Image (cartoon, rainbow, N blue to C red; front, top):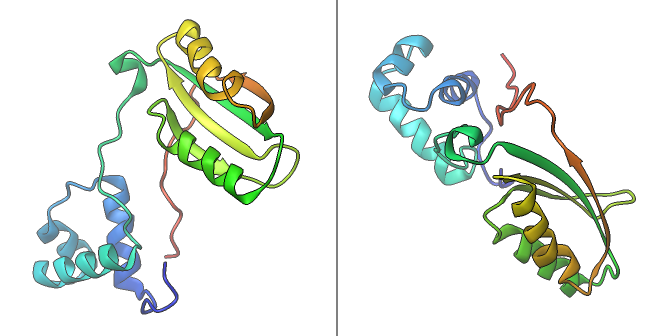
Length: 159
């Protein structure tokens, strides 16, 4: 959230709590739940979208249902940590559809990636493109998820 954003009050926090569970909830029902009119809810949602508090409204797809049942976590260590090479890696990972999430991190690894693929053959092809095909990747470690125990992007909000 940008520093110039107004602070969030209890209504502002209650609205995204509902939207995180189901972003198709009608504004009238949100208003009833938080004691605001539907137009007031609409104004607050619009303000939070403009301020970047609400970053996106999306449908969460079950990967296996669309032929991508394998989730892989990858630690990537770069050869060089020059700014332009880090930025290039960020761009490449961001532009790769199989990369669901990408984090630039501290510690031994430089990036942690969450990748979904159809099978290990698809992952091998991706490793050739992203890692073996890059002069700036020193090494990478792969962790294949055996079970999706908890998956979500819900941010815990204060009551």
